[in-house]
Image (cartoon, rainbow, N blue to C red; front, side, top):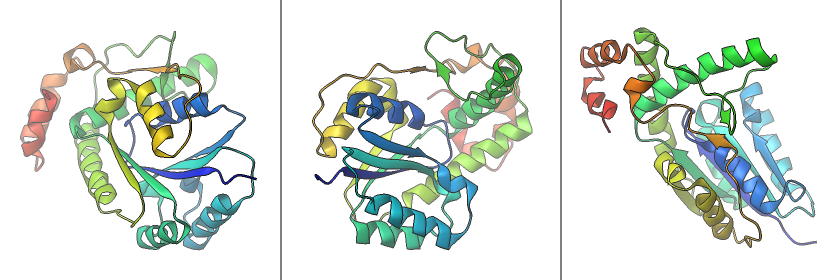
Length: 240
């Protein structure tokens, strides 16, 4: 039995394209040839339970070609102990982030609105807009929650930057996915030592346009709120 390729994907908070990347990886490798776990650590805060799961997951004997997981840095109970464990197990690390904290916060708030709307329409919360689905229309956002989101995006990005186990590490940024998420997924497979035998067709579309004025009618209010806050040095991100 061949040893599967293994990875650990870590994100700072959300809205960085991680679900898009996971979906593309699954398409390339084949849904029956991989096991990709999505943020299961969020349901347990026990250090012992988290580390035990990591050991068991990566120690499994399997005919699969790829096993990996995506986790949020906020859900990791003991980053230093996890870092040491990944080193001991020799698990490759993928760090996926988004440099623009303003757009992270706006995208997150809009995703919450979209999730609420999808619950009303379909009975289940959907956080990403799939191909063929109608995206969220222009909608005002709460300035206080926006500021909190910007601060959280900055803080968690710092946590991610400090997570540096001595393992093979691939750093990806959100804009790379926007210019070709299918190619990024193929590159990740090759980086992991996997052959790329089939293409990926991205299942999700961008939920918030780059021109924020098309998505947020009270954008000026958010600008003014940020300019008056302790995060005012990030105001340029509205236009980046």
